Length: 200
Picture 1 (cartoon, helix red, strand yellow):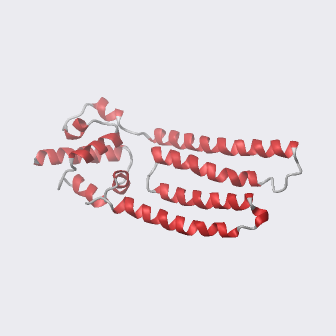
Picture 2: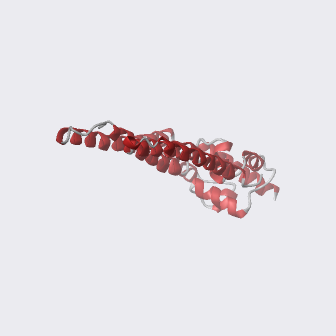
Picture 3: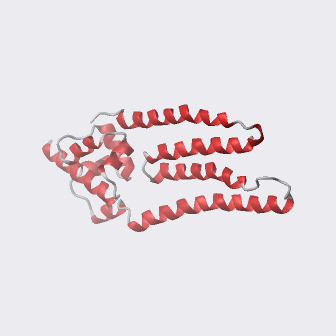
């Protein structure tokens, strides 16, 4: 059992470092505490089979990979994310957001040319903010730190309320922002639930 603990410990450390993740970031992906990750990496305990499967899925390996001591160079290289991979992910995310703003600009220009009687035409860009945040949320959920999703969701809620207020500006419905207070409280509680629900 001791050897198995050491093997799993070494494999988790190697995989985590190859993805340039901190213990806290891996813990967030698993909804565990970083103390639990630290215990696994010090070979003081091992994750149960369900968690081993989650770890394997995160790193794109099999459970067998996690419990096997020796790996070929090809296997190791297949699971490393290089600096270029991270840069490519960032560029793809920025491109997706740039497309949102390009569409907003095209809309702005089109409406400006064909109907210049519309007041507050600049609000087209205001409406692009929630769309842009949704794109950020999608890419962060796929490639980023899941804990950052709560910040993005908070920004999304407030930007939607601002856009709604601007749509109905003539009715002066500033009270719509009051909805953001319980929504923010719910997001805060949700973030705490995700962090604390699992045991070390």
